[in-house]
Length: 481
Ligand SMILES: Cc1cc2nc3c(=O)[nH]c(=O)nc-3n(C[C@H](O)[C@H](O)[C@H](O)COP(=O)(O)OP(=O)(O)OC[C@H]3O[C@@H](n4cnc5c(N)ncnc54)[C@H](O)[C@@H]3O)c2cc1C
Ligand code: FES
Ligand code: FES
Image (tube, rainbow, N blue to C red; front, side):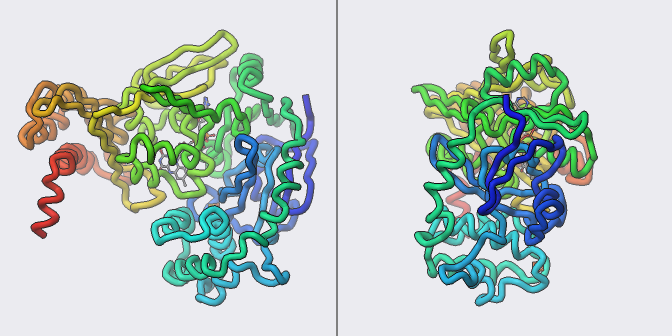
């Protein structure tokens, strides 16, 4: 077992024998290393002012992604290369092409958000040298600017791509050296502490089971996009915290002829190409989960395990008939995702267990759809979400699974509405009957996101929307317009 957190910060090797579970990367950068280019705005993953790049080995290849340093815990940086805005420079030692483009196109006024924008655009510039408007908008979902406006920033993104220079960038030139340095960090259990406050990084999934058997009350931390806020907003104690974001054996994605199994540690970004390939109808829904930084850190296992009634993967996973695999030193067991959610804040997870993977049946010929309504299009919390999986034999609906988020204490199927669909003709009248029936399925709450009445309207309208899209009527309507 090791007793040292070890990572690269820009050009510097960091070794820490003392660290608490709640220490954030942002505090370490600003307070300890005086790297104050990285800003603190919201401290909850919403504004992007704290964006840094984190490079890590993914199946042996070094990959850099923008993340929010405010909700990233320091201990989870073990084995990573953290890159801050101070590391950027152009080929002549002056401004980096992304920074130069921001200056040239007046992409900054007060400048507080600017380092975060620069880092998100730097991440995009390296991953996608010729981004289109959609790629730029997607990369900037997690960055808020309140004085410049986005148009000059988008222009700067296009200009930076024109400028090129990726081959001469420090992260390209130093790739082999950094890869070797990260690969040399041994894959062993690491434990550090500050006083009683403990942070544990297991060596692999089997070791995770052993750690949890010894510490059944420990807090599991994957991407920390939920747990981070427990600390920064609610000042909660999470010790002992068991960090799992680095575990390669929770990051596998296996495809068989009928199913796809997703390791619990797979992030939204890592799974996005598979959504595109196997569930393209859900791609827009997927890209509206959090912002880019959140999707680079947040995991599918974390979203399910968290058990939030407004988590976005559960309605989709339930509609698709997915199962969750739980593991402990006692062995593994498989539970339908819909049965995993018992009540508000209560899931079918025993002490010592962790979510190992989620298995999703491939959709075959089924018609699927996923919808989210929130006050803001991107990076906002759901008022209500719905996912559909409907099979027909041509004229008749042979099976229907429709699951909702934001309508009850847990993500839940709409049993009455499903019954109104099953065995019925695939017609507008049938979907209208289901739209009426769903009113009896849920008694939603009113809160600051939406009133109960509004949520009921949304639920009914999702059925109408599904029909319009699936029947082609929506296209006909659009042509008439
Ligand atoms: C700005 C912002 C926007 C967001 N937008 C959305 C959104 O649009 N839609 C949405 O659904 N969510 C959203 N979230 C919430 C969050 O990103 C997701 O719930 C995410 O999937 C959580 O994954 P994580 O890996 O970060 O989990 P963590 O924060 O690490 O953990 C979450 C919970 O799951 C537990 N856990 C994690 N992994 C496991 C495991 N393998 N086994 C057992 N328990 C485990 C933890 O103990 C904790 O209880 C947002 C969060 C932020 C900060
Ligand atoms: S400070 Fe706002 S996202 Fe981190
Ligand atoms: S330049 Fe002031 S918030 Fe963006």
